[in-house]
Image 1 (cartoon, rainbow, N blue to C red):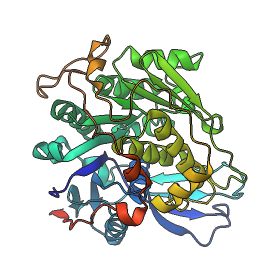
Image 2 (image 1 turned 45 degrees about the horizontal axis):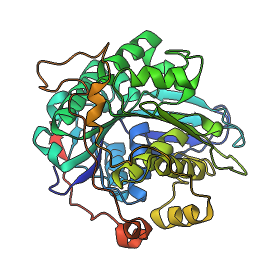
Image 3 (image 1 turned 60 degrees about the vertical axis):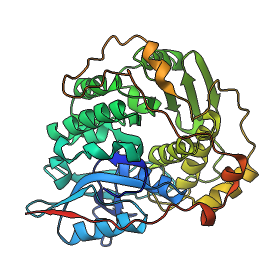
Image 4 (image 1 turned 90 degrees about the vertical axis):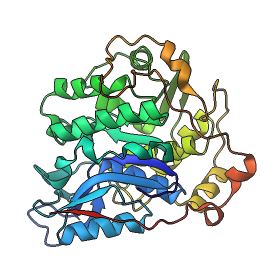
Amino acid sequence: MSAVVIDILGIGECMVELESSASFYDADQFNRRASGDVYNTLVAASKLGCLPSLLTNVAWDGFGKYLVDQFKTYNIDTSLIKTVKKSRNGVYFISQADRGTSDHNFIYYRHDSAACSITPSQIPIDAFEQIRVVYATGVTQALSRSARETVLRAFQMAKKQGCLVCYDPNYREALWGRADEALDALTEVIGYVDVILPSVEDLKPLFNFPDVEKTLEYFRLRGVSLVALKQGADGVTLGFKNWQKHLPAPAVPKVVDTIGAGDAFNGGFLFGLVNAYSLEECAHIGSIVAGECIKKAGPIEGLPDRITLNRLLAQAPSPEVSSPVLASLSVADAASQPQPQAQSSPESGAQPNEAPGQMVPEASETDRAEDAAGDEAAATTSTVATQS
């Protein structure tokens, strides 16, 4: 792995998206792009100045070369990407007949894709001291049994080494088939999670909580230090222990495409965590990034860079900061929370929420005001391993 400090290590699949504004019956042209929930989040964070890394497998065909080039375009470290010759990359088609709506038709070809073969052996055991945040989603867990084991093992190792563990359940019925399997996957990792970034809609099939308070309480009782509950156009609710606060979403005059909005929010939020903004500021940045995302078609086309974000922050009212901690919080006291469903792994050496990570020191106001040109992460020379 690269010798530089990695802000965010993401674990997940990046697919090839083929999108048309016409129906599948009428479509004769498709626009190609790289896409995937974890990848989209890493791109959002990278454009703001973070240095992310992606742990995944890529089939080494024409599409695979295209994907790796896209990773490098967005300054995503590729040293943890394994290429697999005897496999194929996940591909999906999108038909969006009316860009003014969020109604899409999807056709996926991802069964047994290269990313499904990721294993715990690919986790950089000796590199966690160079990683600030480890991030994965329920989509990654749903890829395969080995992918699910990889997420669990990575969270255990990250917890042991003091990294901040961040997770988005991102429930997708088509991937899981049964909601109870997705709930099992969430339950097995929740004891290692410091920050959870769920959406209200994704949680409904799993829990059907009656209100926001019950949602926050569920995760608090399982040792999660910080909850950022995404509520779409209604904004986001933050929960830290017994403190909670709702922040409205910025107004977007014309919504073009909502695909990737949650991923964009996560990228902005994680950028805030890495740079030690207050919890309200993290959510505010995430909401602004998501708002820019939905102004254009595609999950990454509208993502702002650091200069654009600074301009938007200057134009938007700053949220009143009343959170009891900054994002540079040490969440070690989360261990005092009850852990009714969490179980330790004899292999990992880490107990669930026993030694959560600690973020970097709080940034100064001068640091926060720097433009992207002066704050860009240094580009790294990355290598791609090949498996025959």
